[in-house]
Length: 455
Image (cartoon, rainbow, N blue to C red; front, side, top):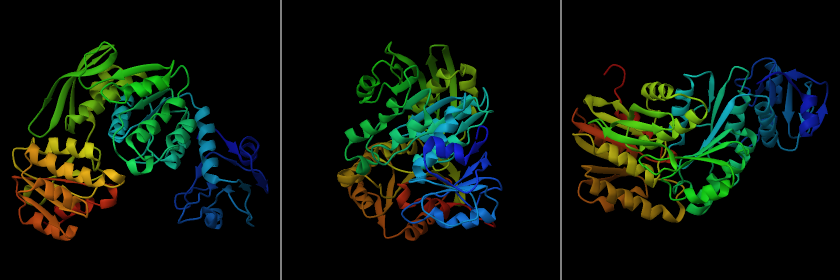
């Protein structure tokens, strides 16, 4: 955090009742397991936990005070508020307002975590950069990220995810970005938003949180871009594209090539000139991600040299098209972080570039609502057309993909049976691509195909 805060200051600015003596703190903790002496403890509540129950433990670990949401008797200064989740967000907002860092906020259905890591890699060449850790992109994660802002940071890159309407609005209000980026809108988390249009509107909530002099970066290739431009009104809009040569597009790519392992090279075109870019990442869709990241980073002050160096050194994000060496020298492409119809297409396009026997291992996609059955069938159909050699699946809805693929398709009753079948065909000429939604836990399949110690 930037400077000290006191419970009385928070009570005055945010409301609430100060109980006991006032205390000063410069760190806020929501987890007693990582709380350090002198931190203030904030008791978050959820469906399955009550942080208020851990105030005594926080005191024993040296907490200076606690922010709680119900009456309690403790020998520790307390600030009692109506909703600690909302209070956490407001404290994060206060810390953000103290910062002079250039803050970039980004959202989208696909690619946002990879784009976040790309922007961070580029801007880190310029100066100290704060970035959202892992996938802490919900309303709590955004607040915790903002609390990490300190005087050393010149840049901050804040990823925003959402499962329903209003969550992006909450997060962007706390973040108050100088630059906002929407990567795209596709049918991911459609169950929570109700429809693709609901997703488009939900992602667009980031626009309202951008101040009038801020920069909004949009994907010119997204079918919904005109809706977002209209919503932006008089705000400064910058467009990027993976390949468009339209004069309205400020950042684009040309001369895209892919090697035999799916790694990408291209030439970035920008207002500052052109630059050849080489990625360690797999798949043509990462051209979109790289151009999006370059747009945000350069609008924040990065140079073309920063972009080239930052993107060149970036390694695959774990669980996102990450090639690994498995049993008997087989290749296992770990794409288990999440799944949607669009990301399955991108993954299949990578898999078929390998000049080996290709096996697509599929788990169920979640949160697709009424689109669930059609989406799983479409994955099987696309994999067949693309030339995947074998289609192996586990899960209730993935059976529909097996039926659509036909031919060398198999459905397994559980992951253990699937892994055992994989082990029977592992060799240096076999490539497995493993993918499914988080709820399908397909990372256990990847683990089963890895070389264990002593092998």
